[in-house]
Every structure is written in structure tokens, then in C-alpha cells.
Length: 180
Image (cartoon, rainbow, N blue to C red):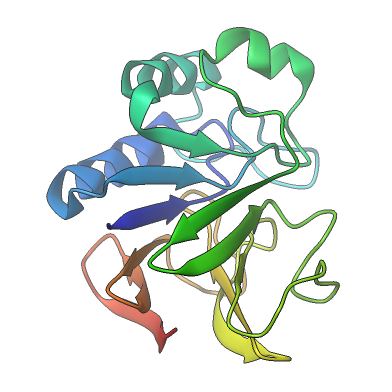
């Protein structure tokens, strides 16, 4: 089962369309969104194609194939626009015999892991920085940001399939990868 991870849309319809086009190519079983859907946040500039209502409409049309968690820029009013649950702080996904703890990263994070066991996977968004590493026997991941990458990183997303996590640019280049 193939999973695709995106994070930190921040209201950018332009970058969401790029991500959904990649989802069309990649054909994941499930698209996992790691928070920060509609609002750009007070510390961020307006992303290209800022259109929160358009983002909500586009995600609602895609909704049955989504798993989502709340980001630090998401609020109850956002849930009123989105027709799929996204207010949970985390979601547990069982994938190819592994437990995946998916969250935004403003609570538990790569620097403050929840109680997991070696072999488990922790994935977050929030920092806008791609990560593929192992910490204390836990695979720690971050697909980066589709709309507002930081520290000169490219706009990116993640694919998990056949025991490998690959962070890719929208041009198809591999940013980071790791075997689980």
C-alpha cells in the first residue's frame, strides 16, 4: 500500500494543485496531510496562489482518500469548511507491519518523541524542512512543505512504499530517502 504525505499547504491552491497532480501520477492508496491547511500563519508570507476557500473546495472533492491531522495554524473554523476530520492531534497508521505516528509536530516532534518502540515510524510536518533519519531506533520523517519550504529547501512531498520513504520535489528529484 502506497502512502503520500504532504504538509503545510498554508492556503496555497497553486501548490495544492501541484501536489494533487503528483498524487495522480503516484497513485497512493491514501493521501496523508500533516496539518496547516488554510491559513498562512502570522510568521509566514502569503504563499503563491493563496486561496483558502479554493483549497477547502479542492480537498473536499478529494476527501474520501484523505487522512489528516491538525496543524498549529488550523482552527475549529477551518473544520467548518473541510468535510473530512482534521482536528486530531495525531493519527496512528498501520502500514506494512509498522506503526506510523503521524502528527503536525507542534506537540510531539522529532525532538520530543511520543512513546514509540524501535521499528516504529514518526512523521511530522511543521518545520517545513525535509527529514529522513533514525533516532533511538525510531524512523523520523518530515516531507517538508509543499508551499513554504525553509532554509533553501525545495517544495516537496513524501512517498512511503515497499519499506522505503522518499522525499521528492515536484520536478521528480529525490531530496532524501531512507529504508525503514
